[in-house]
Image (cartoon, rainbow, N blue to C red; front, side):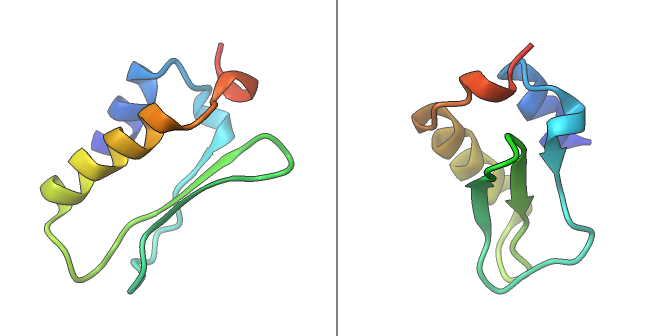
Length: 68
């Protein structure tokens, strides 16, 4: 829910946000060719710290293709 709350802040369509249920060694944030955003959560890092980094990453991205 915290990830979706963050993407809501950026006015992103929830249907355009993909968050795999499995955690990964390497987190990633990828704007896919089909105009969806894929967010992969790290398994070896504090979630709260990573969430701050995610916010910074989203601020640097051009998300205009997936906003309301």
